[in-house]
Length: 396
Image (cartoon, rainbow, N blue to C red; front, side, top):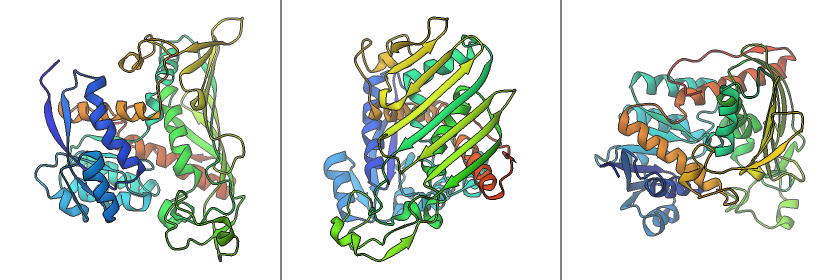
């Protein structure tokens, strides 16, 4: 075990994702004992008293504050986790950059390409290491798939399919929370789901150069929230919502995208938040001249591989898959979603401690936002749209 430096953590927003960040920081050195840094949970910021109490009583933070500016001014805080809703990301990130603190921010990084660009360029100008929550990159089966692409095992890549199919908004009586309002969410499935898909394809195969897209909103109105309806987990009963006034859904429930990758490869994306059947069916399929591979998040510890004429073999993730042995001893012992955040935390801590950008960066977050922006422009115009290039330390 190496001697590790201590990095004081400040968490902004103690929701589900903030709790995952906190647990991941603590779990990281248990799985990666040679990390160059360890996290020390110093202070959490949340305007809600219940969130602050949870941070100190359950998560282990030494103290909690209502105003995140107090957190940023705390000299014991070396790194910051930004786990707030989308519409708060930009201001918090810019304030964090001004305070000179490296940060781990959830996706989508901004409400669109412009906000994401401003965050990425400001962080780059300040020389800050960053991390963006593209956790599906860290699945050992996905890392193995990337390895197969990069070492030529699948031959020349011809086409890719990436689908992010979910059901979390398929009930028309789910209230009109911030996720359905453009001024707060920025977009619908493009930011919430396909930002992951765009990053996955760029990470495993190559850069997306141009797109053609269409979108649909299948549930155009939803009940306005009542008292206490802050998110989909705190809803009133159906009877109350059936008779509640309705508001307009401003962004897309569904999107389909065709994309031209660097070289001659083609990608097809599909995503919905209103499916019936799939819960989190996030799939990546890569086809080449010598073979193909398929991965599905709902079976995240498996990789379907066809590298001969016998067809697909189902390979369980094991020690030969990158990162797997840090968590489990052999095939059949499964990793879970929280483990992906632990890998993310470990990469962020190592990045900050060494000054090397190992974690998905703010530039990667900006790149995904530019693809989403081009797709939205294509859906509006009905034409192919070129994806604007990005600068900075990408890790694809």
